[in-house]
Length: 402
Image (cartoon, rainbow, N blue to C red; front, side, top):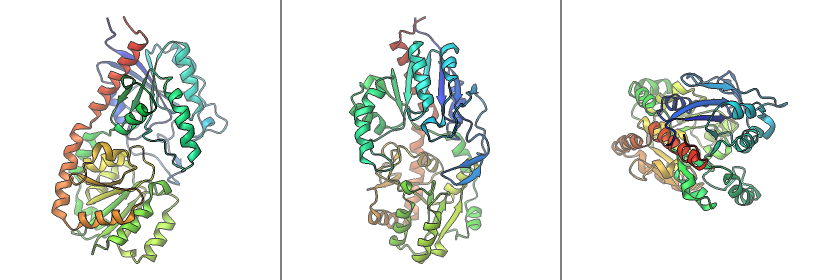
């Protein structure tokens, strides 16, 4: 007889603001008994994010409603983003002695702690699941040798897992292209707390938010909501906005990062000073009002395995424009119905979409309503049920029978 409830250890780099609510729901699932092992508490404690370039702490609870443990990090140069930045040797004893049936590795192979937990799980006969958001071989820094290395290395790497869980259809396609059998790859949709976003959005006073921005209530508003990093391509949006030449339209940049000064200078040189606003970093509880006060969000990234801001915007009734490098576009956007997709780097195509969308405010509202409806079938329950199914499959492969 198969086990009705599996004990699962999730090994994570650090608490993440959009994943914590999913963990709280997962802890209530009838077929899962979860414990989360954090290799760092970055994000749950005040600190400086090197990509934002500012000190902050998330203003939503990250460590409530589920079992978790902080595994001591013994790295001599601790930090997320470096192989030896996370070295948590106590993962070995946690995997060995914790009584778990399965281990889900969400840290990624670029950390030493991933290998500690993986080897421990293999030696002690635990079912192993890898979680990855990879959706293409293209490297963020454009180095071709990395893509070639991935094509050679990844089939063997992901073959070490009993089951690979991926959050997008592009991720499923990538794993299959690497030769992984279809029955060992499970789609676990990339989700946020849909209820929280919908409920918060419903309380927003759109006019008040726009007054705070100094934007007229009836002006078309385009939003960029992400770190101001090169691979997010905010300059493409700025230039596309300028080229669209829509009278009275405004562009809002919500986020911080190294490109801010360059963006401000270019906005000035393009004569857009009065129509482009930089509102800086926005914490989680501020985001619903930003999406609701905007008419169209644009994510023009060169590298974006998924792009969870797409979920957030759509739940708030804000249609989205994405480049064809954004993974969420393949799962969530039906062009012309709830958003738009354009070829990465094609500023003229982006400008044409902005012209088409922003001159028809009634159609934008229809797109926004359609965006909300799309999210009804991309939910936390879909994610958690898929995780439970993946754990069951992995345990079956290990012969986990009562």
